[in-house]
Image 1 (spheres, rainbow, N blue to C red):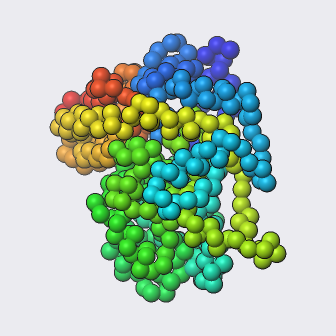
Image 2: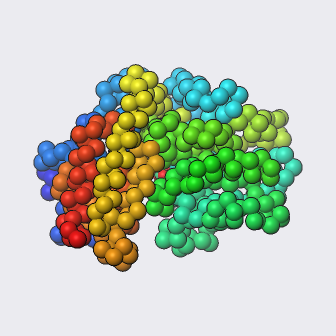
Image 3: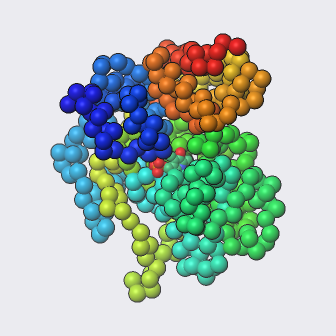
Length: 432
Ligand SMILES: *Cc1c(COP(=O)(O)O)cnc(C)c1O
């Protein structure tokens, strides 16, 4: 099929996520059809290359088509692409669980539950937390605390935790019981009965993503851990975005030496190649579910593709690349370089606050007087469209531009990406 035939067929039959489909299907809109990925680059039907400025919606870690990961998937596909994880098991899933657990101090996070997406990784943590409290004689603990501006996924349970009105208000009637807090002070101010009704508190550690790339104050995680311990509430960390090196360490929680009760991993787990998620938890949680079958302590939860061998083989290969290429060591200077480039970008008239956490950044676009543009003007989206013409792909959060490259970006690519953003900002907002 030609590129134009593909576009026509897409417009005739597809429904894209988070997309106003009238705009998408409009005659003047030519969707970009990607055909190939190589390292930091994506290639369209005309052979044009683009830097992948948001790691293909925050998933890619080592670059596209990394030979080691491709080979692992190919070998596994030729052997066993999928088998049920209900009552059966497979080697890649077993080996990956061992590796994931070994990334944490011995005896801390010891159990791995597989699913498919960030949303499901959170969903299962919620169900485990609620059932744990039922099994241990505290059935009243069935509510969750979550933060304003939080994003934990789009399935109903995960979405209940979300603090982004535009995504959630419409579905309030489908919501789990959630107490929303802005910060630690509000959490500490909760009434005793509310605290005693909490099964857990959920947070995106260090940086909130979809809510606008917002950075938490240093030390918050440690304070939350202490609050959770005092109040017998589970700490559930959503590292779907921050996991696998994005903050500069393998996991954000390691920046504050905090071990959660539940850890949700997805996006970068497979290196950004296959849908795969994992929810890690402790032996204490796991043991509460053990008993005679007739006691009904079993966790009745699962998905058809749990423990998918292809995804697990890809994830194992991705972890091997971290070691072979010393990915985290090599990232350190690049994080510094990103800081320098963003400092410069911050001097642009139409750039407001710039927030960087590790190798992730949010860049607020403002009017010349520093006030926000009306969101209806879609300034951020228009800048990203302009950046595409200058060889960079990324997607904004309203008027916050997101720069979250694969960890394999080199210094030339990083400078190229920031340069493309600068040019695009000037084109759309004017030079001054
Ligand atoms: C993307 C994201 C999710 C949801 O993951 P999906 O794979 O899209 O379901 C959850 N939490 C955070 C922090 C995310 O960035």
